[in-house]
Length: 270
Ligand code: NAI
Image 1: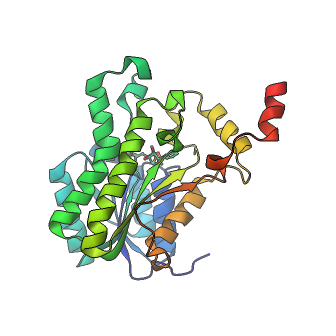
Image 2: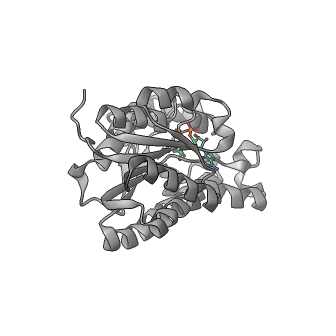
Image 3: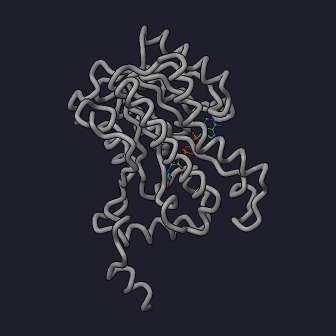
């Protein structure tokens, strides 16, 4: 159902790889709610060609940008502001990648070269995006920026490995830049801490199926789906949440405040 919550709003959505991506689902929902969109992803991800199907559905141009390249980001914002004939009202940062996890290196044997890239792609890219927009004054007053994160930033999930550190840094960047952009232009910056969700990035974590099942059994309402995450993003991009900023917002069916549930105890007893 559409409420026209984003009528007249213009946004950049990073990270739609395929139809399982949270960014993909968010682009569809934003379009339904009346937003105009520019899609972006890393050049290597674009080669898969899937994003063009989404672009057609939501009538959006696609601009390739490696989120660790200031030149790419500048070009992206230039093209987006040209396309919109003005500034941007919202940005979704839905970008994550761990080189060490991908190469099978555990937390106690990190390769620091890979680690730097992981932190740059998964966390400092938010700073790079915000800095680019800041320098170009490309986000409109009362704009809204959302980045996606995971509770491993606060609690230890061993197989999440270096991504836990990346998410802690990402959440900190959202708070720190949230101060500056809030005072300058009332732009709000938040992170959504989402339940485990079956996507390409999610499935990279070792034992992911068990992980999803455990989180579901630990959450009074169950795991939040990608579609529900898209709904939450829409609410944060809308004018109904204008005073929410610098927050890490748990979107996890209650998981973050649970100690244990009978469902999990029952499973342990067997
Ligand atoms: P996904 O694999 O569909 O999306 C990750 C995206 O990051 C891809 O589109 C990929 O191309 C992009 N990316 C990687 N390197 C990039 C670069 N250098 N420049 C630009 N883009 C780059 O997976 P998903 O799950 O939709 O991930 C989106 C966000 O949600 C990530 O930040 C992830 O950590 C976060 N998240 C995911 C959860 C899950 O269980 N799937 C749970 C909580 C948070």
